[in-house]
Length: 286
Image (tube, rainbow, N blue to C red; front, side, top):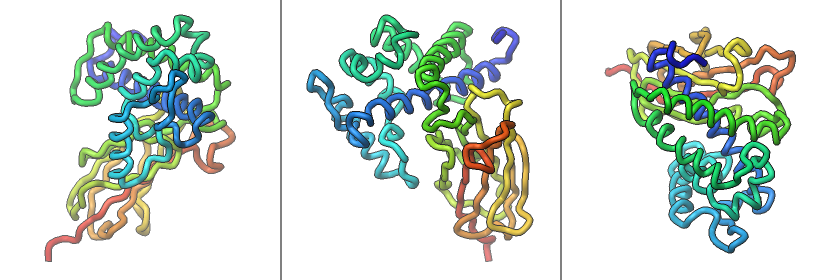
């Protein structure tokens, strides 16, 4: 990618998508490897040196996120932060027992090499996650794209092309956001999310989705539909907007985004991923 030919926003968007794709693969790696030993209780598991794999503070924070989540995360790893993922992969004994077999071919120096790479990615990821209109240096962008590509490739190669948490190499949504400030990072192919604040007639709400960047945009289509009403609005592409009127009033105003690859088969027969976003829409003032 000729980064110097792109605008600052285009560079930031490319890096954000690649880091989010890398994060999804790291979550899959950690969940898959640790659950083979501990089942779904791996957040409280201990390392070969008899130390907690995840610190007590990480366990408490993960439990709090699970407790307050309106839609419960489907896997324990989905309650962790990116920084937590980096820290567990940096532990030498944990790495050697559960992750070396996956990553050693591409990272022969072991946990130290992976730790150094993730330590470089964490501040770039946080910079992109917490700012709008962020500008990365060319060096930061090159690091983000190259290191994420290396990690994704290593994990994909080990799992022989299995896409994310299943055996179907098809695209998934990696980020879903709306103009109300809600941002979601799906961990499965059929996520459901609820808006935090009620909407009102006359509001315009805008939605945007991003797709696993290991798939090219010319390999899939994105379609939108407003559910639960006759002749609900429809749209295509990564962005969709709706002006709310009295038809949308109710406890469960819902919009679905469907992802359909150009393959002859699909993960869920009729589609590869579907995200549903639900909101309460209040009636106009009396």
